[in-house]
Length: 412
Image (cartoon, rainbow, N blue to C red; front, side, top):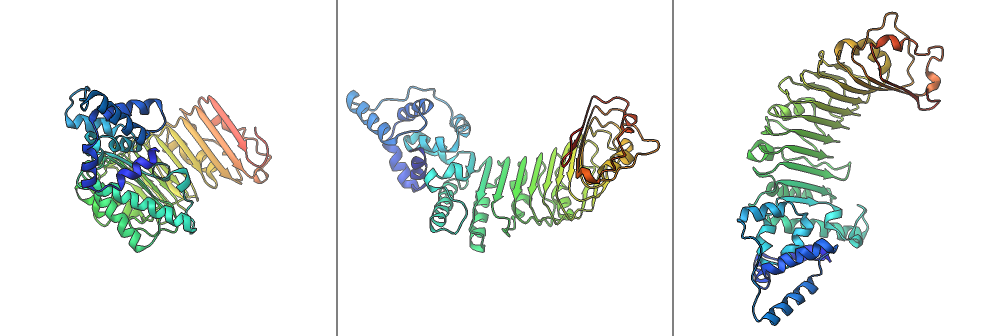
């Protein structure tokens, strides 16, 4: 019934909402919220009938006995309530109609917007198309009511259709949502074939100034000027078409960035992390298959993870790096030859190598602070079996944990 209440509210025009609100009491709101704490959903018919019975029994509408709080506090309380529950409350109380329109956290996914009967799988089946159309229309209704209000957290799964008309519609949603109060923006296009170009202009104006978390999946990102992302602390790009230069443009004003994740970003060939990212402490780069060079100048990275093709990796004597995970060809040899000098304070090392022929160095460099080492080798048959890793103890001043795993053979 809760989902029906949500749809009922979304489909109301403003004048209908006002008329509906006049027939409800603030006390009805509080009682409905109390019932929600003990039941999984709100039965609107029951609550309305109960309210009518109470009114007729007492001869007058009951007054609200709760605390007389300022409007901004009520708005804050609403922002802590899940979107669907807030919509339920607004359906049975005029007092919360305005607060619902000011709800700051909007999450549009199949789980929040669809009943079990109307879930769709992204096929071209007629039922799927109808449910997807209803999903998009419901988002339209909610965002239309939020126009001019602002959204603090905006999470959207876009299920298509993937064409120019739908992309224009998506642009209009983002124009409503991205305002100077936004802190988190997550946009996930579910199709890998999507060719949607994210409107960077929305981030170059005041709208990007307060964003702290930016998560984009399956879109094109082509910033041509520096973006206004001064408060950005976390950037997550998954299958995003962006070049290394464009990423540099994106990060040029992101002085607060702390975490950077790049996955399947195939257009990046050279990745340069500038020294101005003083707060960057965590970086992940996974399967950016055209990537050839990673040059890091950020001085305070403490954790770095990389998986993909072998690249030219320059960590610029990163004294703060404590945890390192590398997954590429010849990584064991690279770790022995390069890491003791480039990351001298390393404490945790996890290396994964496919089919590597390892030869022991004559005088191995030492990891002075390494406490945990994990080595995973894929394709044990290609490892030189005469080589028994006897040299490894000579690489460490002290080592607490050592794990050697062979994927296609045995574990040592």
